[in-house]
Amino acid sequence: MQKKIAMVVFSYYPSDPRVRREAEALAESGMHVDIICLRDRYEKKTEVVNSVRVYRLPIQRSRAGKLSYVFEYASFILLSFMVLSALYACKHYYIVHVHNMPDVLVFCALIPKLFGSKLILDLHDPMPEVYMSKYSIGNNHLVIRLLRFCQNISVGFADLVLTVNEACRKLFISHGCPKEKIHVIMNTPQESIFDIRDSVTQSRKHSKEFIVMYHGTIVERNGLGIALKAIARISYKIPNLIFEVYGDGDFTDQFLQLVEDLKLKDVVRYHGRVPAEVIAESIKHIDVGLIPCIASIHWEYAIPTRIFEYLCEGKPVIAPKTRGILDYFDDTAMFFYETGNEESMGRMIFEVNKDRKNCLNVLGKGIMVYQSLKWSIQRKDLINYYGSLISRKKDDSLC
Image 1 (cartoon, rainbow, N blue to C red):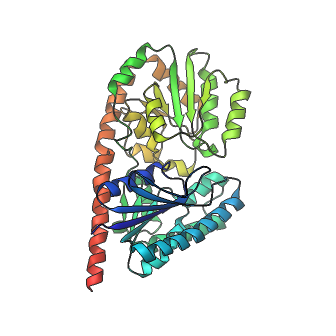
Image 2 (image 1 turned 90 degrees about the horizontal axis):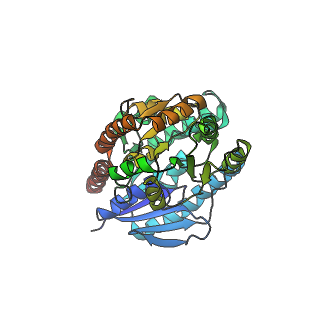
């Protein structure tokens, strides 16, 4: 009998890469997978994407401010509770897999949980730390204490907790999550979309342009402002420098204005949000991937998927020296700059352009790290965690 799985995420599908990787891995293993998610303009209410059934709710992410976040979260939790409960009445899901943020979205699975479904909470981000960084508030602020309380009760409600790297796992354990309950599924790219192509890196040696790339959410905490200032510092030293930027977010208008202010219109090419397949194709034609960020507690625990997307397409990476990244890479496998430091970032971009031989050596070590963490390995772990929960559900039904 085909096992039925539901996923719930306050994001768009299939553009959310972690959710897509996990959903398609489960579908490929023979499970029936339904996704409940946001609905962007022009998207269908329901459709099947690579064997995954998608149910889109009539809510869009506006990024308009604190109150809009609260309203959107509350609306989505209520609607997803209603839709998931109705679907459960027909499909009797074995497992409901809920992705944060927010953490309390996990309670939309109350009805399936009461009737015996097992529940996974997938913590993409540590929500208190994200809000501390986003709104510049301290650890003892009332909002942060409330978010930490919500995180703890959400973790307690779940049967299994997943997160994105070892630094986050240790953080959640320090907040009270039982060690045996939380496991790491790394955000490494789908090999069906991204693939190592060392020959592409070699061919870039003869290009007239030196292309640096960023792709991801355009928000202030992701350091696009710092990246532009770093690019402005060195653009006169690298006359053929191009900065390719893909993505959108609530910092887009400020980002584009800063491009104007810094007189970088001839250097920066902004493409907006595009599918993962376009990102993969675009990476083939660059020289180096850039991971900008501001100095913040949230960034200390992050290791962005795009690091691995660049590496598995055979491109070196310039990244901040943070705890989450240093757990996996050292300076023989990654080009590091001081977190949030535009001068240090600019200097590293210049060094990568100047010393292509060393660049290839560092890239080779980085690819070796990627190979030890690649999605085919993470996929096996994910399927095994699902298998253990399905076995527990069967054991519970026999009691």
